[in-house]
Image (tube, rainbow, N blue to C red; front, side):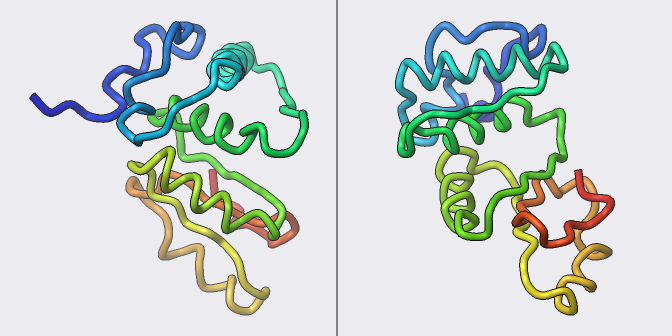
Length: 143
């Protein structure tokens, strides 16, 4: 029987702790390190408590992946807006494709004149995520 990749999002909301890697992540072919699973649980709990959080550590330990997996676990809560440095946008796109393949992600880049026409055509129930570089003037209605 085929199931939706997010079928194992915990019932009871983001305060329910994942004891092992969720099936919706295993379905991507990726594997979280134990510290990333712990970070996922901490992000979910903090979000449920309306507590602002910052992930900070050495480069290369998977903060982008933890963030995307966290957002994927909140799939039905969106849409959301991710704002990241322009230099990392391609990485974010690649990681969203790998770790959250069910998401419809729109990258909002370009100069001011090219961005003015984006907003009206990119709305509606199919839109899951806006991915926007810092300072790009993201659409007012995003997220």
